[in-house]
Length: 257
Image (cartoon, rainbow, N blue to C red; front, side):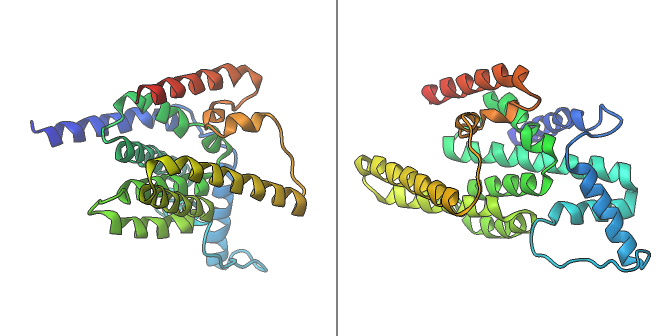
């Protein structure tokens, strides 16, 4: 068996294991998922003229998961559609994150698979924010393709376009990431620290402007959110220890790199 065939088999088996949480319960519990299912069902009623007085609003983003769910519901029914759509979302996010880490570390991050799996079923999944979730996975895949001197860089644009249909915020983040990365590469190494401090300063000013212009709330919990370890802090303080443990693991991984 060739190396490519072995890697394909490993990826397929890993994907099957990764999707176990999507099938081991009678129903997927994920926050807004019920709302997505209801909206997809209601949209079909409107299309068939069975919901007098209602019409479908036209919008360009925050709809990809709903379109996917609606198409699957027409073909397989509501219950199967939920499992298929959510499973696809999990695979997009997980393998997008895997590809992104691989592209920036120059080696396959197999040791980080448990961490990536935890993120795949983290806070965003549990809240059922599947348009944002899919968009983030597609943007991570696009960033993997758009790594410096990659011959696949052109393929990142279609992925970002599809990601925009899911949600615009991850796309804006991905573009900002690419701009920052390219500017940093063009600078001398000793000046990159100044760029980082400038970027952090810009974020602080943006936060201040948002606070002045809008009503906002802040808490100390957001400090952990900067690292992404808060994705484990889902059901209350009992999960805080897991979030801190994940933060420590990531710190050790970063030190080893």
